[in-house]
Length: 153
Image (cartoon, rainbow, N blue to C red; front, top):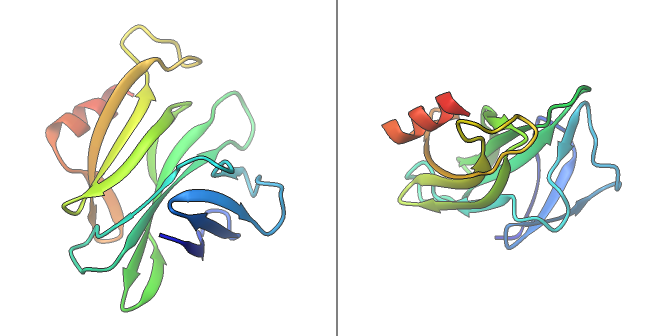
């Protein structure tokens, strides 16, 4: 879906076409420690997350306000009464790499490269998948496998 919207985390209009980030006003993508999505990367998905029949969005952001970490957040942008509402950011992990975001049957499916049991924080190398659902305005694990995965990342 093509959409331009502002996410509270960086307060800048973001333009997506078919789920691919195509830029925003100004080319510097660092805002208050949030690097935002990277141009040309598929870090967004559209679909009905709440069962309302509306096309909600999920956007992945990198964040770093100094230091050696890069935290990856998932932000739901929900449609309620025709208005776009920012949901609470969900921390996916440190230096993880999102490879695919999809929405099926009101469940968000995130494929990413995370940390294995013997992996250093610098170098995530383990393929992982988690399932999330929207509860209120935030994302929560949709199954016990997700809860276990998130505790280990």
